[in-house]
Structure formats: structure tokens, C-alpha cells
Length: 355
Image 1 (cartoon, rainbow, N blue to C red):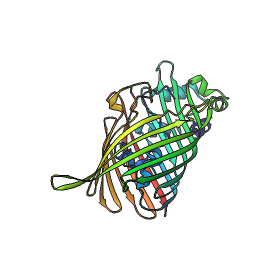
Image 2 (image 1 turned 135 degrees about the vertical axis):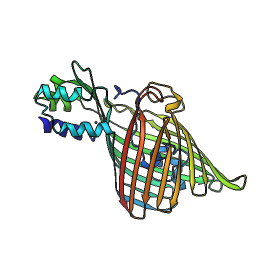
Image 3 (image 1 turned 90 degrees about the vertical axis):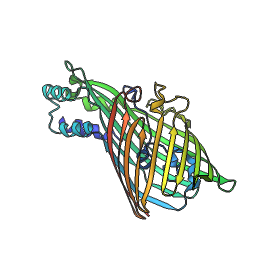
């Protein structure tokens, strides 16, 4: 029973939430954008444009294929909880209750993503596989486990063109998503019963849909400020339009995002305000919607990134050669209803291989 529970929980990351109402729902979080505090609407000059602003595809300068693009993330509590679960006999009500009691009030997160893609100037195609799981134990007297898990699989296609001397970029993208989600609360008695595996399978909800993204970007080139010439960019994107009702699974919410960016020598600075009309989640806190960040090209192959995401610091480092991409990232997700209430620090690693 012990191995079955752990195996089922891990599998649900790719087969998988409104109990954790404070956390935003995403199909995919790009490691590079998150290193920049999530501010990418007016940058979007790589494959991440498929999720941030398809107009940025017109700003891609070279052809690239990523055959292997894997990312994994966890919070410290998530790592500890899954590690400790290996030593628990989930056939025993006493051990199961003791395990849950030791994590009362903790917010445990794990996530995996798979994102192979092909990009060239004005065009991108990608496959999508992503899964996240949030676990929380509550009620010390009668411990319960809250499971919030979402898994997506599908494909994305984007196209963009430039106009007016390449200053105006316009793009569109489509995504087809198959989703499984689980949003349930389980008692110790539920977990220790012989048919718990069957119950988990029955609790999964399925859905699918085709989504439309639209984006626009405008460049103001060589604006002289003091002794420097600065390129400014402004971007606007509308994401997850049309068929975002995922049937019985958790719906994908549409949102409109606004972004600004400035390029100075080897620096990129960016500022976003996402979800302009508060369509995502149950709150309207502006602090959760502000993204601020920067990227510095220390070497042609080495990039340093930092920013503020929902009011919390982000740090990232990226190594990118013709064949290998390697990234490390840390950021905090606001899991409360307003910025500064309750943060969940996370750590992410990405490994890519292509040509």
C-alpha cells in the first residue's frame, strides 16, 4: 500500500484545484521568464512566446530545435514530504496520521514539465507536458490531506509578422490541451483503505479544449536618454481565449496582460501587469499581478536574471550553447489571497538539448 500511494501521487502529476485558491493556475511557466520575475509580455523573443505573447515570435532571429527540454521544481516542504513518505506504512492508520500531523500547516509543491519545440523567425511549434501537485495536511486531531493536482498534455503552434520597418509585431497562437485534475480532501481512513488507488482514479476529472492567443508588440528604437540610446518595447497579449472550458477538469482561465521592456547594451529590463481585468482567481490584489525583472548577458552563453514576482525576489542563471541549455531558478509563489500574505519558495532546474 505504501509504494502504491507514492507511485499514484507521482503519476498524478502527469495524469492531474480550487482549495488552494490563492495560487494562480498556469499551463506552463518558462524558466527564463520566471528568472526575470515573470515579466515577459514585451520581451517574448524565444519559444516561451507561445505562452506569454505570440507577437514576440517575429523577434526570433534564428532557427532552433530543442529535442529534450525537461524542468523539475519543488519547494523544500515538497521535497521533505515526498522523501519522508518513502518510510511510511500507509496501511497503518497510526503511521499515516503521524505522518500527516508532522506536516500540518505546511504547503508542499512539486512540478514537472516537458517542452520540446521548433522555432524560426515568425514561427514556433511545441509539444506540452506539464504537471503540478500541491499537498497540504490540516486538522491535527483528525488529520486530512488536501490534494490539488493538474496535469496537461498537448501541442502549441504560433505565427507572427512584423510591419512598419519591423517596429510593429503581430502574432497569434493556438494550443490544444488535454487536462486531468484532482481537487480532493482525504482522511486517514480514506488513505488506509484497500481501494484507495481505485478511488483516486475515480476522482480524476478529464477535459480538453483548443485555446487561442493573440498578441501585439511595438518598438520605439534608439530613444536617447542622456548619453545612451535605449530601445523600448510595449506588448499586449490576450491568452487562453475561445475553448477554455475543460469539461469536468479544472477550467483554463483567459486573461489579458500588458508589458513594457527596455534594452540597454547587454541588459533587458521588463515590467508586466498580468490579468488586467482580474479574470484569474478569486482576488483582485494588484500586488499579485505585478511582475518586474531583468536579464544580463554576462557572456554570449551565460545569462544572469533577477526580479520581483508577486512581491517576492526571483533569481536565475542560464547557460545556453548551440546544443545545451541549463538553467537554475528560485522564485516564490503567493499562495494567499494577497501579496505578502504567505509565500512558497520554490527551486527549479531545467535541462535542454537540441541544435
